[in-house]
View 1 (cartoon, rainbow, N blue to C red):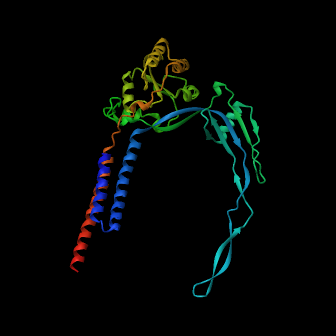
View 2 (cartoon, rainbow, N blue to C red):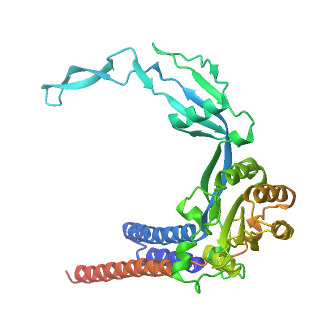
View 3 (spheres, one colour):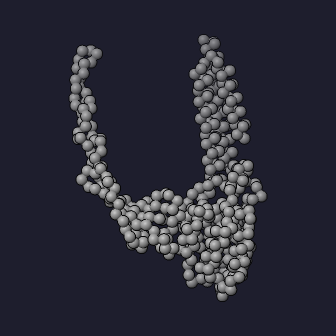
Length: 387
């Protein structure tokens, strides 16, 4: 497709050069129209590829330090110009007045910097936080330190106060963010693309991937049988191991009376598979909190981790969220190996049919314009010949 577009563009340009070899202006106009039209086509292809093959995934980090920067000000170069009126001699001998710049009104301006709250993450990034977040974690971690910033200030000095994580796991401040990555499998005809055409609209809406809605959760209780929400615990473990292991672990709990293990395959179809860094673990429990079934989804080549997680689940008499999460984390640290999606770079993305329709419309409009221009020029030449 791309080769055909490029060859047709080259043909049109060469044709215009041969047709108007004595009129470079017409050649330039034809080339300009060609460039604009095909630029739009290639832009459509690029946008279509980005929208169709790029997906949102979770990244997990934790805050190692929270910081408070005091407001301060500094002297900067003045931005207020000063003008003067000068007389200039015109070409006819008369004089007129005009305004010219004559330096600045002040020797300097004062630039104000408002207070700022930030957090340092374990991956080295710095993010902005609000005042309440700073107060929450600085009071929880304690040991607030003063840091002199040695600023060159005007009349308001501003320094920094910071508090570091106390290394207590219960006080770990997790941070979940969302990032785009390329997943060609989901928009290809590969056998790895789990099509969702046969899944009902209700299930598609109910089990839409949480990252698509930027839901900052990792534990989802669909059973209603649990009295404890284990989301914070799982999110803290995700943050602790997520950056090193490149993983985002999710746990879903279903009522076994309503859902069998087949629901996992429906969810896989709705998601078109998990994201590259995800390990999704599904449990089916009854009202007595006994584990009836367990299944896992990921892109692991070696599924030993899946088998170990299932075995650990069935070894338990009742569903214990804390024990399950801790056991799964230990297994992840031993058996998890995130799959590199470079293995699938050979796969070609199937563009949407709407992309080809838009391209066809623009190319047809382009050729219509070219034909109209050609006929107008031909008629103009005939008229000139007879006059």
